[in-house]
Length: 177
Image (cartoon, rainbow, N blue to C red; front, top):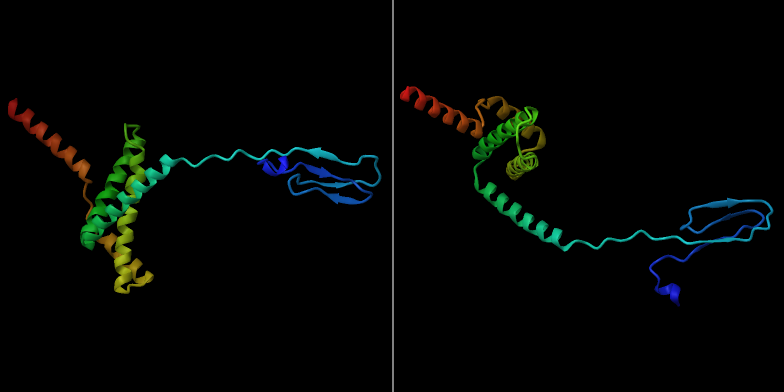
């Protein structure tokens, strides 16, 4: 009766006869002996400890899902051209983060993942619209290549802000001197 209530499996018993005998799946062994006075052994097998799910993680996951849905709704309200412009800006920002990392400047490592996910969401919405219009994969790739060739290179928004600030400081210094 006590064995039924135990969370552990029953102990394995290996019985050796004159030929081959296999143990239970808990032991994972095969014994092969011809003649022996050995009649068996009892092994205790411990089950791994099961962790209880953390409730906090689920609450965070639900909140993140809601935030993601909210962000997708916001993206879907934009036109395809606006999405394209924002993708270019975000890719520029991602490049700036990579440059900061290579220069060993301070940066938030979580920004990489966040930006990549945001870019992926925007491109997903763009592809959803193409599917609704009946554009197949091949034509979609062709249009995407054409769009990439037409991109005008410009600094990302954060770099533009820095350049404007530097320009203002330089103007202030030249006017005061």
